[in-house]
Length: 206
Image 1 (cartoon, rainbow, N blue to C red):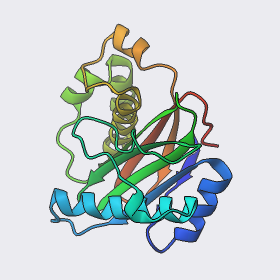
Image 2: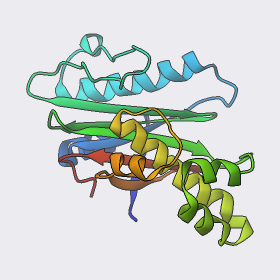
Image 3: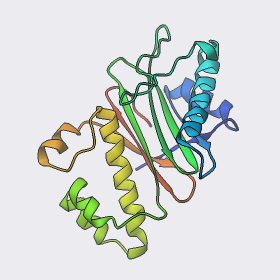
């Protein structure tokens, strides 16, 4: 599976703008203090998004109103004439990431980030949410690789739920059907983090 680049903000602003212009999709990251409050991390990543969108569409940052309503995708009501901007955001201690997609009205995306260090025992969680097949696959890996493998699968699962606009639920055959139809990419992230992007509809991340 290919790994999508994630551009640190503001250092890689120019590269991020180029990616968005060429592919209609870009991922950005913001480093934060490990003990930073949730509100601080939200403000930092939203500032990065506003800066990117302002530069890309040549509109004042103050006119970009990201959706703050809990439980809804940020930006689903973002009004930029002629564009449908889908956004997704994820936070972990030390790092926040966001995806911006300039796609069709039906396009949805989901992004998820997980810090691999200090994961609790993954077996019970994997059995409930990832299903027997994936859990067995993780368990068959060398011990040192089990936590990273679990993190990669978990990030993909969470990204899919976000993409589909569904709450996290335990695995079932019916749920697996409901979550099908997304295109997945792993993310090129700093060591110690795993992440995934899920896209539904018309955007090809490659």
